[in-house]
Image 1 (cartoon, rainbow, N blue to C red):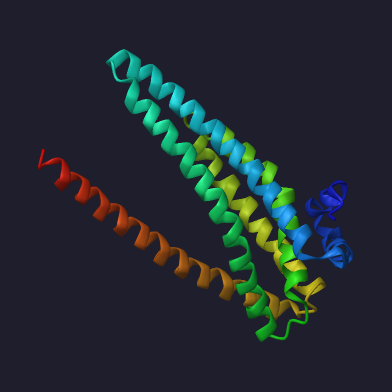
Image 2: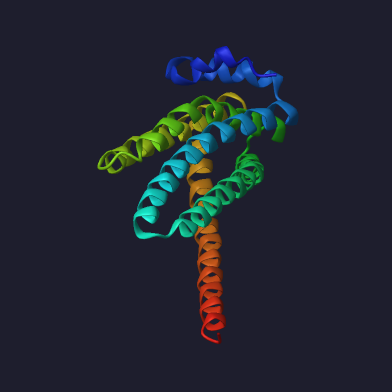
Length: 217
């Protein structure tokens, strides 16, 4: 079980290596799943709050225009989407985590899959409050755009934690750890592009089908 109080060490670059090496002695699929689930719940709650605010605003505008049904349907869809995204994120973590593990292993990494994924779950959990705050503040006009660089910096720091983890937990040299992360990020970008491309294509086809169906009535 993760010592949640010790997660503050994720924010201390000088303590990262020793902390990750020590903490990953507790590695296991169960603790990893718990960490990931908590992190996803934290960020999902923030997304739900943002969706609720959006639904309330849409409801006010809908009431002014005499259309409350559209706002209600849109709000329900947003919450279903958040739930589906949470489930996909949970499963996706293990998929992308195993990809990083196998890349690291191919480059000489000696860690086990359990240790690699547990190591990755620690910054995900520790940084989830920051991602949640960024999500919540994004509803404020103009602030959302200003927070994009902040979110990017948090993501980069998360990669830095992975880099330190690959060296401390998987026994990799600095150069090989960097190569593993770069290869992993590139591969993920390609996979995400394919997945989102397919989703977009299906969405367009679905929309066209609905439009054609509606035109027959």
